[in-house]
Image (cartoon, rainbow, N blue to C red):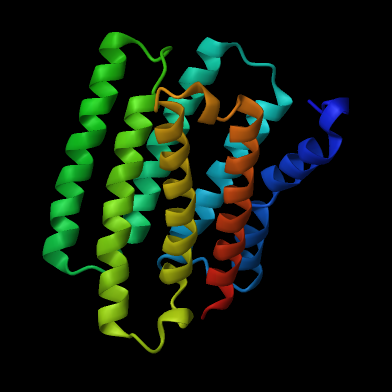
Length: 212
């Protein structure tokens, strides 16, 4: 809902909520949906939009927010891994497939036993850290294979934008758990920082569409 006391920020975040539709639409207009990793980018953008619009359109209880967050966290993690492994060799891809299957199975089983209605902060930090490492490996492969043409790689822009968001998210979590109340950002500040990180990420996704 729009807060009259901070209208600019609320409208900015509202606009960012709809922004992931733009790269998805551009991929369809340019008929790039059959190419890796842009086919995965379409799904990622639509999931990001749905996650944001559900929070805006429906008044969710905290329990329902935790459940929705877990579902979208797992789905986004799955498609990010599928996208970011697309330029790696067969052995690494196979190993990632096994690791991905095991990790998702463990999380699904654990949450089914313990309940889906609790906080998943530690899990999100773990999955974000995993993605950051995977992005580092994939970016190294991109630079090694075509250092001069790196800006024409959609995967480079996808990974760069996602890595920026992940690093800022991990930094905010680290500051929040630092034990120093004077440096801990408020919920509104954290929401704004993550919204701006989303803006950078989606602009990078748009650049990925035009990189080809």
